[in-house]
Amino acid sequence: FIRTHTGERPFKCDQCEKQFKWSDSLRKHRGTHTEKSYICVQCGKVFSDSSYLNQHMRTHTGEKPFECDQCGKEFTQSGSLKYHMRIHTGEKPFECDQCGKEFTQSGTLKHHMRIHTGEKPFECDQCGKEFTQSGSLKHHMRTHTEERPFECDQCGKEFKRSGALKVHMTTHTDERPFECGQCGKKFTRSELLKQHMRIHSGEKPFKCDQCEKQFKWSDSLRKHMRTHTEKSYICVQCGKVFSDSSSLNKHMSVHTWLRLYECDQCEKTFTTSQQLSSHYRTHTGDKPYDSDEGEGFKTYEEPSETSPNLPDGHTNGDRAAEAGSCEPKVRLKKLQIRLQRLQTVELNSV
Image 1 (spheres, rainbow, N blue to C red):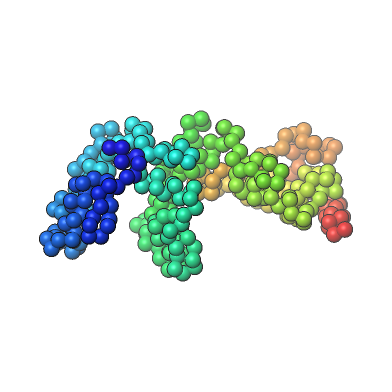
Image 2: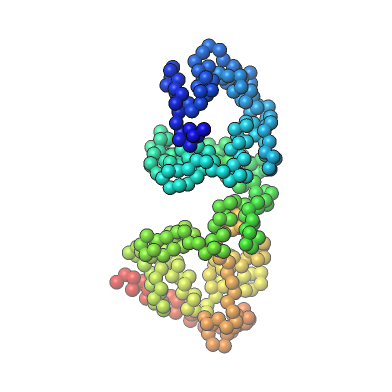
C-alpha cells in the first residue's frame, strides 16, 4: 500500500499506455478495449465492467447504501465513505514533500503541488487565462458565457456557483451555522467566522511590503497602500496624512464640533453622512454586514459627555436643543472648514 503515498503506477495498459496503481484496476480498464460493454439504459453511458455500471445507476436512483456511523451521512460509493471518515479520524495520509502540508486525498495533494511548481495546465480559449484546476476553468468560462445555472427556488435569483447559491439561501432561512466560540456571534459562511476570529486573536495577516505595518483586513491594507503613493492630503491641524480628499474631509470633523447631519426620526446629530446612515439602522433594524460583507465594519458610537472635541459650555446631550441658538456659530464653523480645506489643497499643490 506504499503506492498510495508514492503515487507509483507500475501496471501499464499495452493498448493505450495508461498506467494504474493496482492490477485489478488495469484488468477492469482493459475491458474498455474489448467489444463487451455495459450500457446505462437511462443515459446511454458505456462502462467496461458491470460493477462500474451498478455504481453509476445510483446517480439515477438516488440510492446511497454506504452510511457513516459517526454522523449518518450517506454515500453512493464505499470509497467516498472511506474519504469521509478521515474527517472524523483526522487522518491525512498524503503529505507534501515541499512544505509538509497534509491532505486526506491524493487528488487534493496533486492540486496543491501546482502551488509549488507553478503549473497551470488548464487554459481559457477565450482570454488565455490559466488555472491549476479544471473546475476553476469551468467556473471562469461563465464570465464569458454569462451562464448562471444555479437558481434560487425562493426568489428566482441565479448564480454562477453552487456555493454562492448556498450562501444566498441563508437570506431566506436566516440560517447562521457558523458560531464563534468566544462570543457566540453567528455567521452564514465559514470565512466570515474566520475573519471575525481576528477580533479575538488579534491576528493581522495582511502585511505592507513597504513599511511592514500589519492589518486584520485586506481592505485596510489596500487603503493603507495609498499612503505610499506620491499624492497625499495633509491635515493642517495635526499633520495626519490621507490618501484621498474624502478621508481628509471626514477627519476634519475631529477638530471641529460641527454636526451637520440630523436624524429625522429622533433629531440626533452626526458629523458624517455615514454615521447618520449607521444610526438609521437602529430605527429600521437593518443589519447589512452580518452576512456577506465580512467583518471589519465599525458602527458609530456616541462620544462621551466630556468629549475633547466639544467647545466650552457644550455637551452631547444639549446639542440638538442648542441647534437654533448656535446657528451663527454653525455658519462660522462651515467657513472655517472651507478655509482649512483650501489651505490643504494649496499645501498639496506645492
